Image 1 (cartoon, rainbow over the protein chains, first blue to last red):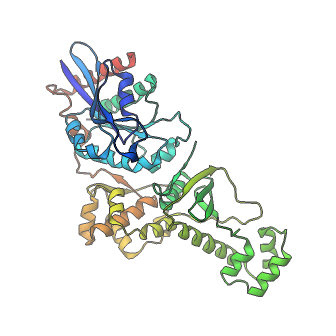
Image 2: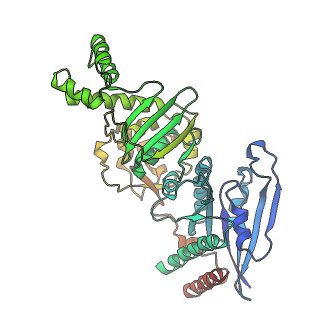
Image 3: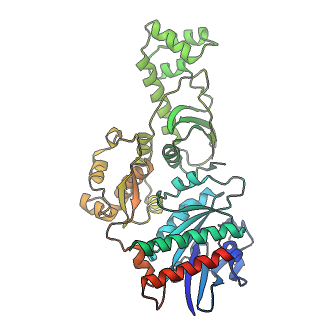
Length: 177
Length: 274
């Protein structure tokens, strides 16, 4: 069976694990641990190695979704996970502007690891205090040709839309040549 | 939706950049540790500013720029009660005390000095309120933000912060094509002009630094200022590997382009069906 992979990355608590859980046909293989740092204790657990989800197309083809750890001290995992990826999704919590700068740097790091197509997903757009997409685009320094999509990680249709947009970018890239 | 946060995460320079590029209308309210400030913008340009208890009324602004004497200020404050700044301004122009240019210049200098003061604030909550207009009794000006942003960026001295803002010197830069922005109207210093002359997607920031003989701190500070002022944007260097190069290893064992596209189309169909 041929397997292809996408990576879901982004700062701590952006909704990466939920994103994968929402569309994966298997229970997400998660490496979550209780959070030890007081500063980051805005949720109970966090991913420490990776999350893994799967979408099987048929007997010959499956898509693997890998979620990266959000905490900076696990960034050595990023390069390993990015090897051979089809594309990547950078998730950014729309309600936490303090993470935008880090999101920018994560995007930059992944572009350097592997120049594959990517989209940026503005998560938690349904929450009060979420920044507007236009403002986020400027704060994240995204050019007009870079896709910034609204996303609610717990909503299946919203997650599907993000994946489809990334696949559309990949198809376009293959078509362009 | 909300545009709010803390100055620890978003500096005044970065907020001005956002307001400038988005062409926003409204008020930026900042609650610092000791004082509050308010700046009002029209179409992304500074129209009004006040800080602390100062109301920014015309008599005190003219006094601060030496357009009226202490005695005249005292008289104005006594007699102009209930009069709007526009009415008072007209009265002073007609009486020959000041010209319209004096008034506008004084207001611009005053508002600019407030923004420069705010640039030094590193702690405090901010909130942007859409649609807030300059108070009826005050005079609105129209100050482009590019120069203010460049000035704020020049004050950055911490290499660590600049490294966080511009992590990758292998990126290239290109000019933005924002309507109404003319590079010649922005006050750039000699060093900044030298960098500007090398901006081209063919040149990485690192190459520009070598060509201009600038160190890490200098080049990052200048590039940061140009980015914040919305004059340039990051682009992938012209000689960087294409995304297609990156996709080469994504389909193990599948070399043909048409076959790869077929796989992507199957993934699309599958995801649509979830």
